[in-house]
Length: 119
Image (tube, rainbow, N blue to C red; front, side):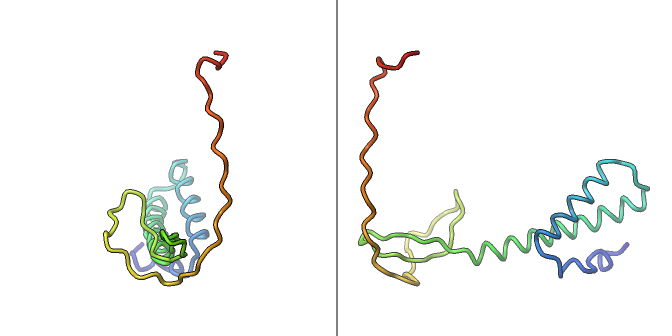
């Protein structure tokens, strides 16, 4: 099976469909009950499916934005930064800004004296 034939129909699959097919292939391979040639073909298709899923996720992450509230209370939209990723010191101009109403302030939970804990 060539990589070109392994890609047949994969580019049209949604993320969920590609992931479901990949899961099925993994289950077959882990079961060990398929012939060697079929296992090699399943492995090759699985590699292409995994790459397709990774590409779809990368494109989706580029489209996701996070809403942030500035110090003045204005809402702004900026690209989502992954946790642990280096953040830029110079934030770009807000894409959409609108004042927001002040959120109700919740009272702080009462402090518990460790001596009052029964254990």
